[in-house]
Amino acid sequence: DLLAKDPDSWPYLVWASADASGWATSTAEVVSRLEAILEHERALRVSVFLDEESGTVTQSVLRTSAVPIVVVEREPDDAMLQDAAMDVTGSLGKRGKALARLWVTPERMVRGVMHHVVIDGIGIELLEAAVQAAEYRPSVHAYDYLDYAEWERATLSTMPADHEAKVFWAKMLQEPAAMQWRWQPLSSQDGAE
Image 1 (tube, rainbow, N blue to C red):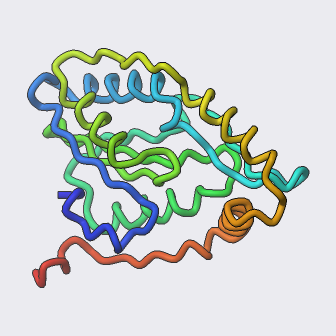
Image 2: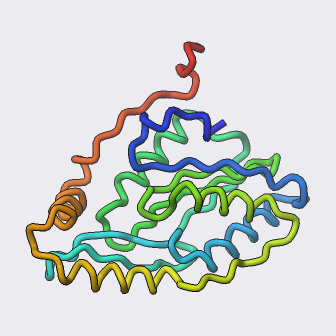
């Protein structure tokens, strides 16, 4: 199970696993549900990058279709997971690149990897519940992701250029390789071969 992965193996990445087989009769239905969730939850479609002209960290909300949803013939293997993790990690700091990857298996299981910039622990629980629910009812937010982004932008604009948070994110987005991670295949965890 992807959630059983050692979280220390993938700093800044969040893994998702949800079973849609209780309501969905086809992978197409699951893909449709994921598209509806992505359309409503703008945070999952965010691209974060360093604007070269202004030197500021910038966020943009991408089209729903920018987040890959791949129907696979079998459960994602270690190589597929490693490629996706590298892709998500490598997308941070690149304009127009989504920070989430999702798969749907023939058994109507949803697997995913997302950068922590776009989702947190509570968000992953809400995403998994939305995938598993018999009927999807988009949540009503008091504030939208764009409200948060506007607040954050205003807050950051009042900070001096050498503020710790600004320096940290500028470095991470200029040099994504500075966000080191190591790959530990699923099969080698818990001593299994």
